Picture 1 (cartoon, rainbow over the protein chains, first blue to last red):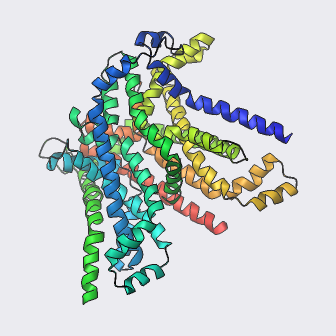
Picture 2 (picture 1 turned 135 degrees about the vertical axis):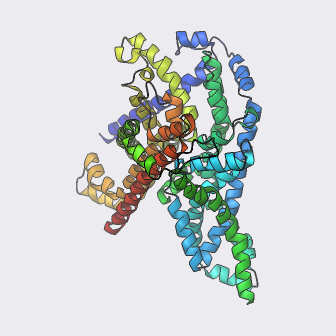
Picture 3 (picture 1 turned 180 degrees about the horizontal axis):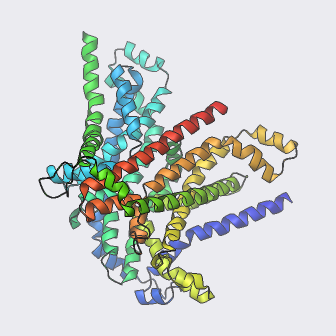
Length: 274
Length: 291
């Protein structure tokens, strides 16, 4: 009886997983066919591995440039966010000044606000008044600002769990607070840094709304924006579009295959504590 | 004196950079946003007039905003129910000493690593071509016409895609909760003769109350802020039948060039999300006391 139950569970899980994967399967399958073949029968197998759609999409999406832009934005946002957030969290965790308590509370409270509530003023201030549109640095800066509260929250929680005897010993040895952070705490924080970086990096890679408000020129487009503009150009040539979507997925899928443990762990920690 | 100097240096080097970025990106725009809601600014011209609270009045007297609020509620409610049931069911199945747990988990989670814009377009093709073709081949009339061109079914399409994506995300949180249920409690219930169903109903679910609260609130806030999928799957259509609140704000500001009104709508969204989050804090705190 028990064995039978297990088999039923397996069968249901496998069928469900297949159902979950069907959209991806159909997407990839049809990138090797012409649009005519696709419209006629989306389920038929391609006659041969026709890569024309990919060539077409790489050209029209300006793939190299948009890939490079996305990589620059995500890497810079993630790295700089890690630096400033871990440093401020360290002071919050180690110095119980009144101002720290107030600042930490305000930061955490601001996590509640949805992006939409800053969206319009951000566009007005940075895009309009300061004229910083179509500049990757603007998007990086805004990206860091938006993710600071979340990262500080996670770092602070982690740092609080590190015993205070450790920094006292370092201080007695004559280390300054700054030096203690870089020499002792940063290495200890490795697990939480990986978690936060994965979370922030993934979000930044997939970002569309904020990025699209600032980056409108084709040479500053990210992959999400390039996919969006490619797919809304009202052409009826669907197969190259699907190839464009696959191209948008491949980089992140490779990342997922190698770092899936950290990604999933990051999600759990991020949502449970956040 | 020396110590005070060291503290000031520490503050300037470690606290000020992050605070400066946060103040310029979050705090100032937030306050400035409240100011914008009191004006009739169109986003382009240099001059604007103060109109007091008129924008907020317009938000609530505007039938189309109330309509999009209603749609958001329907979308959010259905997504919360379906994705939590599915996510919890998968998590329960996977924590039942199943081989290949990791592989299943990775597979079900996959939709969450891909951006909403791309996911929306993938499903656009599925609904417009694959499902219709499938419907024709098996002669199932419901599927023959694309969900996305039918005002009555486009919302259903959005709920399906959201459930498909979110359930894998929630599954991960539920698995983490279920793993922490102490084994001896489950064994004790087995000795008492509890079957699979009773174990789930009376032991496991009460033990993961906190995970359930987290997942439910997470789905609520996520769905209220949903923009990407709304844009790429339906673009609010057909005939504005799926124009939800976040999409509506975007439209008001950037298509109709009513920045003051759009910002007032955004403030309303902010208040809703803030209330939900406060509720979450109270509910999970209460759960902690009980546990």
